[in-house]
Image (cartoon, rainbow, N blue to C red; front, top):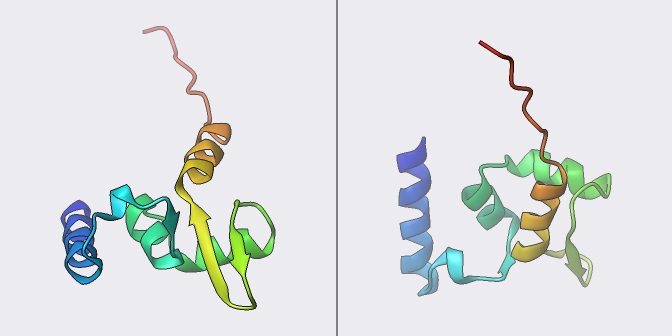
Length: 84
C-alpha cells in the first residue's frame, strides 16, 4: 500500500508539475493520498464539521495542510506503557 501511495504522489507531480508535499492547499483526493484517509471518511468528517476545510463557492473544497497537521496532533491518542 505504501508503494501505491508513493506512485500516486509521483503521478501528481507529473500531472501538476509540483510535489504534493510542497502544496499548502490540498484537494480531497490529495488529502486521501497524502494522509491515507479515505475520501468518503473525509467527506463524512467535513459534513460533521470534524475536520478543518475551506469551501470556495458551492463545490470547491480545499484543506490547509498546516491545519490538518494540527488537527491530527490534537487528536493524538497517548499510548499506555505497561511495565514488562
